[in-house]
Image (cartoon, rainbow, N blue to C red; front, side, top):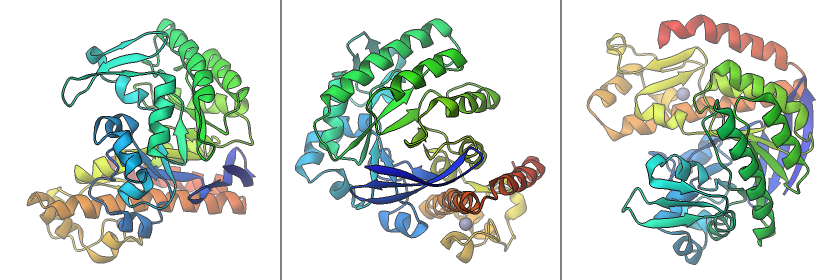
Amino acid sequence: MDFRLAATDGRARAGVLRTPHGELLTPLFAPVGTQATVKAVTPEQLESLGATLLLANTYHLYLRPGDETIARLGGLHQFMGWPRPLLTDSGGYQVFSLADRRQIDADGVTFRSHLDGSSHRLTPERAVAIQENLGADIIMALDECPPPSDRATVETAVARTHAWAERCLKAQRRPDQALFGIVQGGVFADLRQQSASFLAGLDFPGLAIGGLSVGESKEEMYSVLDLLQEHLPADRPRYLMGVGTLEDFVEAVVRGVDLMDCVLPTRMARNHAALTPLGRLNVRKAAYAEDGRPIDADCACYTCQTFSRAYLRHLAGAGEMLAATLLSIHNLAAMMTMARDLRLAILDGRTQAFVAGFRGSFLKHRPLEV
Ligand SMILES: [Zn+2]
């Protein structure tokens, strides 16, 4: 993997990340395909939306159908029909979310499957081996993601995350996958700084920011990002995990983040909410019953070019599957368009004006549409 910056504007960065399955232009939003599918959207549709990187979840694929099965079937790209770049997480985040079904120790974590209650063990070495079987272009070190505001728990998690990061690097066998380390530290400036400096000293080709958007306030999240950009190496990609509303995407990119992923755009689509640069629009509202306008007149996506709010409201009300597909297409298009517009603004040196315009219209309209 090779990363180079094409331009910087303030703290915002436009780069090119080269992977074995193609080039990624940053800033970039990666749709999430938890079970090796972005729910309700085909790979062909994703490609026509301009999606370049997809994320799949190791925890789910390890349990079902199994990483070894996927390896025997030619790897994850082949299995899910996505020839472009893929990223897998370590499985840690989902395992730690199991609360009463898991037990952490210094060596790893033992957990019971949410599917059948069977017992499993995840260690740094296992997390790497499973991801090597899956075969994504970017893979993640096993980390511990604690509640962000309990200092003692966060300190323990940072120490464990660092020890596990070193073990993941030692365990890696495949040279064609880029293994990223994950910065933890909750909302504590000194712990974040310590974590970033420690991981920057290891041989990771990219670094991720974990443990955000997990219950802290927006101000706390933005101040962690403000602080981190000084401590993360400028020549390596920075990946903010699990954050991806339109407004958070913009605020993270102006704070020096290159990659983001989030289930929100597609999850909101299945709940009949559309993302627009003016705020969220719930297509089920009675006001749209005879509204012949598209969700967003400025959006070039298939949904907005073809269908009215009234039709989408009808589909949603009738419980039709197509509602989820069309709204997912629109919401992902909104994220892709924002990423592309930000990249152009960074390349042209007009990021500040672009972001000021977005903030102004978003904040002005948002209360009307929610
Ligand atoms: Zn659209």
